[in-house]
Length: 124
Image (cartoon, rainbow, N blue to C red; front, side, top):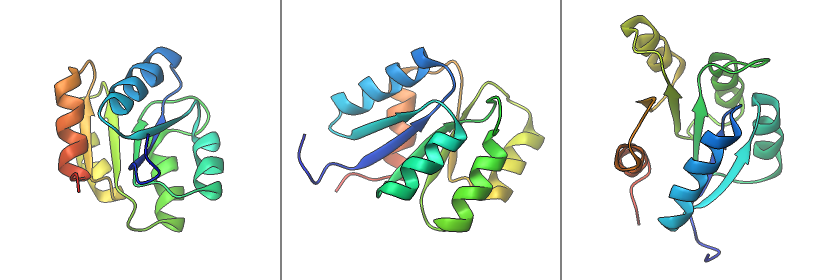
């Protein structure tokens, strides 16, 4: 992986989901780092630069809405894509109002994940 690889932070409380997403991204040339919670994600964001955050919406402790608010307070322009099983139009509006740049419904196909990432974070 080159030092110019785009860095993606993957936040999900489920290890299997984090692992699959990270493997897909790494296979496409991204540098993917994983966090099992919102707090761990904030810790990683404080330590390094990321080009994109992919985060679960429903997590114990700090949920996606709180995480997005915390990220936006520090990194107003960092793209954020939420991954959720909720297909409620009100929730989607809430995500948009919080500053989320895109969302993906679970379960998803690998091509759908990569399409959302490419839309929000175009390849150079």
